[in-house]
Amino acid sequence: MAYIRRASDGEMNNLDVPFMQPVERGDAAEQARIGGLKRALRDIPQTFELTGYVTPEDLRAA
Image 1 (cartoon, one colour):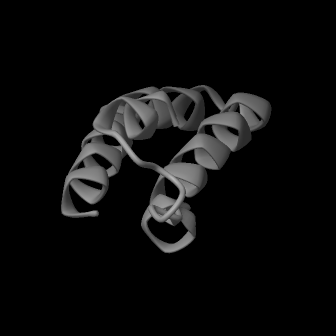
Image 2: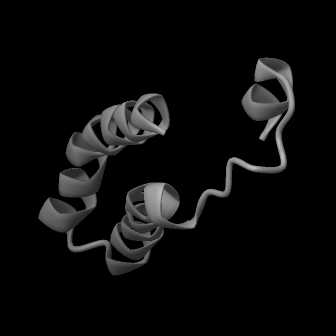
């Protein structure tokens, strides 16, 4: 789970600049879209269930 948390944190960080660009342009739709991606990534550690995966390949596919 720590690996998943690190990966999702890294992806959220990668979205910081793309999120700020529509903020500066006043593009509320794009800001909301990227905000939704960040929210989904932030929720992964709380919502991701590990028990259904038998192999590392299964987990990677998820």
